[in-house]
Amino acid sequence: MIRKNYNISFCTAIRNRLCHLRETLPQNILKNRDYDHLQFVILDYNSSDGLEEWIAQEMAGLLGTGKLLYFRTGDPELFHRTHCLNLLFDLADGDVLCNIDADNFAGDRFAGFVNDAFQTSTPVFLATNDDSARVDKDVLGRICVRKSDFLHIGGYDEKMEGHGFEDYDLINRLSLSGLTKVVIRKPEFLNAISHDNKLRIMEEKGYHDFHNLLIRYLDPARSELIVLLKNGIAQRGTLVDRKSLKASVIGPDSRKPAEYNYFLQETDWENGSWTEAGSKIVLSFSTIGQLVLLESKKGYLLHNAKRYYPLKDEGNIFEFILFQSQMANRHKMSANLTMGLVTKKSPGSKIGKVFKNFNDHSPHLYFYYE
Image 1 (cartoon, rainbow, N blue to C red):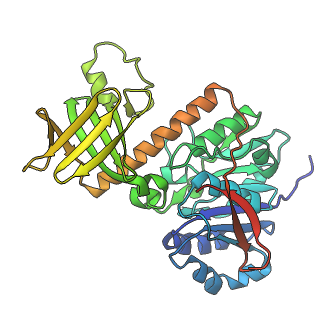
Image 2: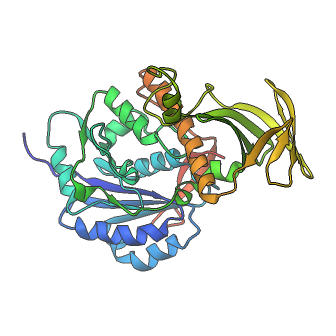
Image 3: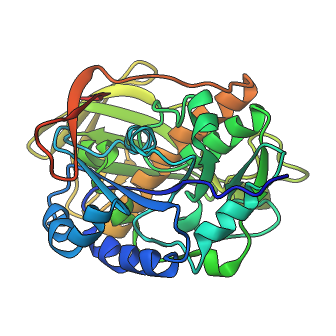
């Protein structure tokens, strides 16, 4: 087999993560300068943290050589992860596309490693997730795939709006399409900047819709949760801690998949409504009717001696929003896998414009979500 040097695109989708990119991008360029057929592609998804100015000032030389492509769109009001990634991969022109998150260090000569991996007659893609070993969650999005294979399966599932499991779903569908997964195991390719959950989700719809969370203790393994959204929608469900549940159950617990520590007892959230009047919160659900919660002097809310505690710790709030996003996406992933679904395609309804290398005269048109 004749060796080929593939044109490789290192692709980074970003919104307000300049704090990470200014550390990772220069290092990634430096550490992979030996591979001549490499291009870095950045999609700025309406950042407001100075990213555009930093690229113009610090990366002007690379823009001129074509080693760096900078795309920017000012249309989406919030970050839609899967849509942004699909748009980015569509804009990149490499034979092989690698997702490199803004907080990821690609590693020394990673481009050469990727090129070597595709020197095979077996159709392959690269990923970091491995059932036999734990890797940093911040590098789980590292997936390298031929552009033709990516387009063949329709890219990421854009019904997955928030954070989590969109990469696992893509991996599942690439595998179902007949590709063989090659796991990236070398530690030097698996480094990222650690950060809290706030940075993961603060630009996404789930965070901007969230108003409050009320928790009622049921037993050591279960709590009733009521989520209050800013638009007046309330969501109700029972959170189960699998570890505590197993400790209280004699024999194997087969009621829910064992791979998740936390899950909803119900199939999905029950939707209702809520309003607030002074110290009262009025909830309405079809299954249980109306609940009137009265604020107590001790900080919790009462309904017929049932105590509902509002979640106040910011770290826990971000953790819950992340959990809710991941739970929704893993349900969609499981449904895709159960159906043996390979191809996903769900374009948005509004037309946006994306501009290349600060050229405002020839925009690329695309569909996006409101």
